[in-house]
Length: 94
Image (cartoon, rainbow, N blue to C red; front, top):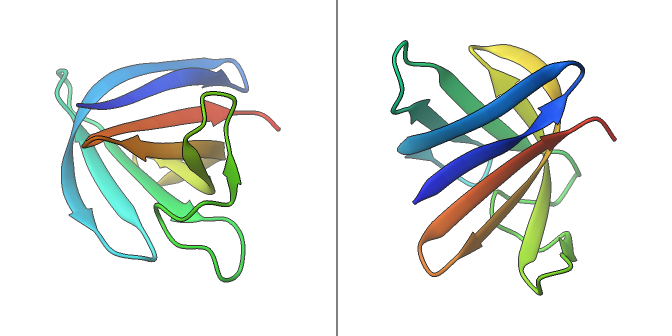
């Protein structure tokens, strides 16, 4: 399952998504809801890849700090973690 859940700059994001494409440089998702939305994440730090471990979160999962784009527009940073085939994207303001 791929989930996007969080708040950033006055907007709430709560979606289940499907993977459209993924490379080391970016991952693109499409929401399952109607209307459909495109979500893209790109690693924030030089040398980081989508799915690399920039740090270990409080649940013990490797997490990547990413730029979060919603419908092709940059919104905020996001944390990306992946475990047992599940992906979680958490947009946030800091």
